[in-house]
Length: 338
Image 1 (cartoon, rainbow, N blue to C red):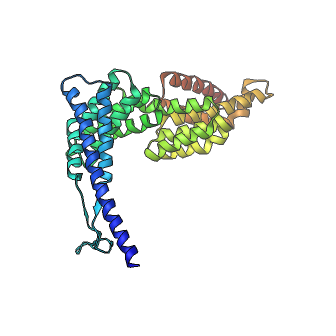
Image 2 (image 1 turned 90 degrees about the horizontal axis):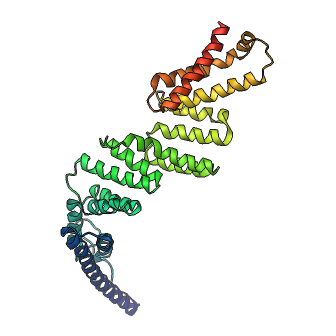
């Protein structure tokens, strides 16, 4: 039994030594990779190889940090415990240097520079990855005293690249985060409005309603305060099952945000279609008789279309014109009932 314990102890010592050596070796490779980026960036000759060197250096630094912790052991192979905390004691070899490297990357905006490089080439996929790494670094413990304006711009650029990479889910999430931090430039509201629409239109065109709901749930989990997403969930239900099945979803959206013009518009249009069906099925001979017959159906579309027109905060000019035309016709029928 003692011999077995001794073998275990020796095994742990050799393993720790190997890990220590690995972290140093990996750290050395990370430094080489970073220098491959930095020298070209400094000389203004940034290219694909240099941009890849920066990414590789980050990955290697991360690997070095992950395997750098070496737990101390007693002679019998059991872990040494810190007398104050009671937790296993450990040593590190390169962690301090890795942390400084990450701090340098954040302070010098290295991934922002690479993001700009890729964006200029219209390589939006790699631009989004670079801006994303920059945003992550700015929000990490390695960045210090980062103004909201700096982080919000990085998130906007990440979302911008997501949009043109057709990654609309992450475009929406990053744009909303940027706006919450105070970013208002470069048509950010248009991106926020359009990105979810792009997603839903794609899924609806393919009749993939499960995919649409999954995408919406992903966005709602990240941005639960956005009322438009609840409207789009209602729209998905309407496309799949019809307006009447979607009414509870629209009502839930409006309970969350009564002043959402788009939700009011959708409700107004849906209820107008119910009026139109009643008109098509009516056997009334005169307009007055028809108006009396459909009178119980007029209240809802008039209310919701009127509210959408009054608010006019997130609907297109075409929607506004359509709402006004429908409302005028409904009001004509309503006047015949009075």
